[in-house]
Length: 477
Image 1 (cartoon, rainbow, N blue to C red):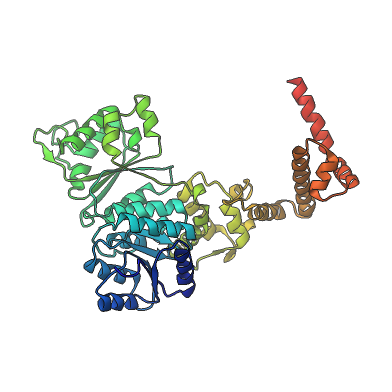
Image 2 (cartoon, one colour; image 1 turned 120 degrees about the vertical axis):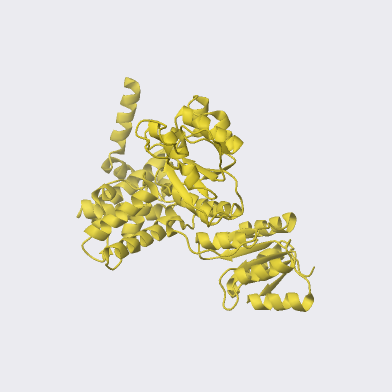
């Protein structure tokens, strides 16, 4: 095979970065600016590289076109697909086309080289399929945690395996379940969802398995349950952790034997259904507490997929907020509103306990209530405006400072500079004194201040009083 790794990208800078990185690692490589150039080289040489790294969107043939044609000739060739478009559809289409891995741009160079080495070592993943329509953009994401979810959906696209989705309320578990269904061999059959916590326990058995006429008071006709409704497709059992013990036993029997009975029925019914379950609870702990059957847990936990809360993917908040504002505008027949940088920074610093669902509600509120097309910090709901922000990922303290400044400009006009300056100096001097064991001269030297200056600032900021109060409190304990 010629030239170990082929790089295909219309962006010269991307090619240059990868070329330098691979050369530094001693990995032989060859570059192309279009998919057609790479395909012509394969035709001309009748040979293929040991691995191929390709952009997904290029002039002319796309990376997916290249992937398809290469895999037809060299099914074992590992292909890494790169894209700056962090959408689920690209990830799934790449995996369904047989891609080895999915690398979102911008990427870490060391990560890319490591991925190339894995491709060279492990060989290709194999999965056939076609590109599907775009799914709900609510599960778009550039965050690494969401990229892992995309990869898992892609890898499971040709599987019938039972999946357990874990994640906090509002994080989008049903959206992921629908994505797993739509990108599966069962896509043309029904997707049926049921929240097992929302249905009274005395009705849940009939809801799941159906009932025969006369099975109980009020059963005036035969009724198909959710298992029958989902025949050939996917049954999504949300909040499975709340399922009553007796229903856990019946569900286990279906998963084990593949048969079930309607309530009041005597004829077994064959279950041809893929089960996807979800919970916000810790099922491992519920098993230990005797609240959830261990054997059912192992039946459900064939593949576990963790959906990250929004606070672990703050970089996705602008992307999601724009989508939700556009969605609300379409529903109300108006023009989509836009968030200012200060409003976005403040929102990225929020914890959002209600996760994506809460963000969607906020955006809908803004569409209705914000007075202008441009939404600033002062236009946010009071519960967001008044809540504290957290430092953004990567230690971005300047962004956190900017968010705090935006908040104070609204709440305490005329006092912002003085308050922030005092807080800033107080933190610096405290940390310097801590580092020097309260030796002021050394602390002043560390900070680049004069001895008289640090003494004056300690008095002005009340740091001596804080220290005395701390000692008094310690002595009084």
